[in-house]
Length: 126
Image (tube, rainbow, N blue to C red; front, side, top):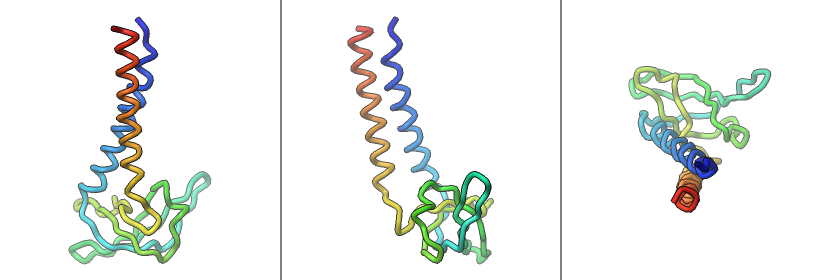
């Protein structure tokens, strides 16, 4: 049995899973306005330091490991999505440098890979 059609199927499923997880993280939390106040650098990476206020009035200072941190500037306003039980688990979901199209493109690419793998599978296994 030929296994090569599984490669685009697995890649497509992985891309769709990433897009779904990203969408879920973005929509599941409580949104609050915040501000980038700096960066925390380690030996191998850098993270944005974000300050925001929860609905119950607590000021939170946390880091975000998002991949677009290099485009962000200190002082820029952002919107975070945070976990009510653990607000320090916040994620920047809106910022001047972010584009909502990335998730859609990854989802479409995942769907295309899945479709291509299925078509290859039909010819290889059918």
